[in-house]
Length: 209
Image (cartoon, rainbow, N blue to C red):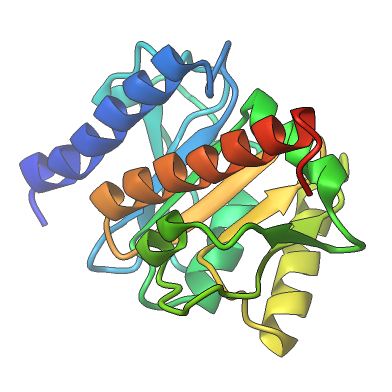
């Protein structure tokens, strides 16, 4: 695979990160995006980089065996790389994984019932693959641990037994993660779940349940 192909794989992530930054979903250096390559390795945003100003050099390559390719500027991969690795191992069809921190994602995590968040039966769920009339759908919710590997291990343990209904998960008081067959679809999924979250917050505000 030539260097231009590897660079191209990052361009859509750069555009998505800039868009999410402008929405207030990746403030400061928060959040992380990745894209999987045909050989099973993946690019992930480097730690400590502003998501509104990313360049192709602001990504670190992770190989299927966990090996980290040394970056020219010694950048480190996102602290949440273990979650991306877990998602790619669990879902072979996933080619991109996006994680953002929005106000609404954190608010709705408090609406969770035990370890799931009931989702309203909105039309938007079709965009996440739920093609049912008045679906009874939930999003998995995980505790936010300081050690990210612990979160990743809990994701692997639960999803190995109970696959999620939608390609998304919520980490309490932290943010939402989605995965998809392409970066374009992952961006769409983020926008869809954020619409659902905004609806839920608005409904809660006016007393709807």
